[in-house]
Image (cartoon, rainbow, N blue to C red; front, side):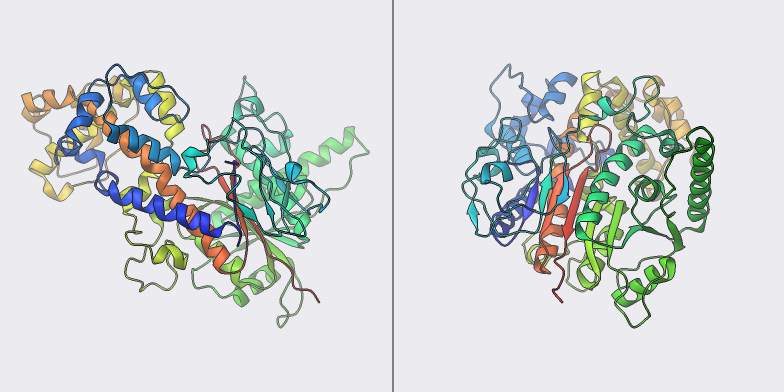
Length: 546
């Protein structure tokens, strides 16, 4: 299976079936996904698992658990495992979208009809077929990708790609470790002026997404890229000054806009200093334009166009406005769906590059009463039985399975905080039931503390709570603390299915675009060990011929 999803009229049935099966999988294990680990003791969650599983799970070491969460890892099976336990693991990986970039992350360019099918489609290349006739793909996936059997027979022979305006040119990237210097974690390919104020994770994301967005903008022939939720403008700054793209930044917070303008000015000053030593430097492209704007889910395309024109300048109010593209890096909650709706319904908006996050903040309409829900967006998913995703399920979908597996490989002592929190919840619910699931203070290096010290610090912001010393050291509490590995295992079972929740949410967005007449691409662009929300959705809307 290729390391990307290209949803077209030729593949929509395949991906609808895939989405339906993923929803069904989550329905089967909804009790697991709808639970909270902090209720491990109050609701006796361990006893609710399949008893046959417990015989195996109780013997797991942290290393065993890390392998259990890793798709390509070999399992150490000292005894025969129940088929149902093997099945949940296999099913979870089957309905997890590719998360590793492997060989290639690509950007969009116009297709060349002379390309052969073998050159157009490759198992590790993010490419889509563009030919005068519909072609049947007949190339096996490379061994670096997911196996065909893991993808419900969605193999090269079953997918037919229609004519497409998209084709992806190759850009070889390594992992984040190869991009960032060992000494300070600074990005090797970004000049200092673009690295300022950015942590390594953000450098990694900004460098890659700017490359993708820059090529999408050029190939779509748009005049202005609109960075929605631009924050302090780090992505826009690189896109404008580094890639020569005109950018309008929309941000709801005045403070962030002030910071962005300050950083733009600092970059321009730094370039002026560089010119003293290098007189042949070319002039800087136009700076990003920043404006305050809060995008509401029901915002009209006309109002959006007026905002863009007001920020950059453009045609008169009665015109459609400049041709633009929408860009969003880790758009929180409903901002991502709002971006997709604006893209679909705004005539002069021709390109979309979107990375979502914070799925738990999505508004959800389970009764079909909300006009603009964050999930589901598509009519297809809306009519699937059991498509509703609980807050708990959407929240765990934002966790980092690769990072967690890496921590398990180092030993699980640093994960005892899961058990600490569950033990504390039992005490709180017993004496102060109104503090059920209360937000507690985050305690650094909790695993280095004994439980009473952790508990005291964690509840320090709850003015009416004075933890009884007897409860902190009771036999029941001490017994619960010995079960910390069971708590870690239970959390890991939920984490195993978390990417399936993300799969459903992202495919729902692709299906929404398709229902509105736009083909979409979805692929992993970031290293998930550094940036877990790493799927980029790219779409180019065909322009109407004049």
